[in-house]
Length: 125
Image (cartoon, rainbow, N blue to C red):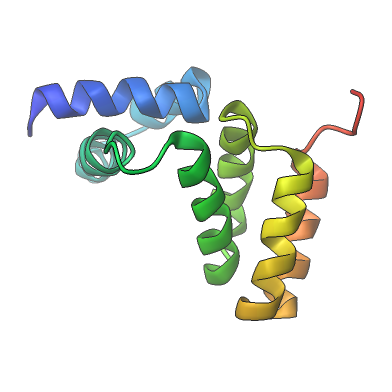
């Protein structure tokens, strides 16, 4: 494991997903799942999320679209919160899901809208 890349990834992962969630995921890892947590933290968050080509806001928008396409509601919940931390607005999230409805299918977008209604704060809240 590249400790420097892991540490950078841990910092980014906590900033986007929230320290409470990330720390719980790491603390809950056992001998079987710990390598996955290390892989995700080092490569996903340390390497990819810290590349200079896209900002975090753009990466969040892409993740919302891809998670909609893959119909992954658990990860979508998590990345909706991260998108808000990265400055993505409710209106932009809605537009991503509408775009995904055309290219990924209406049922996938319906599920994403459903998850977003559970996660996103009401306007003005």
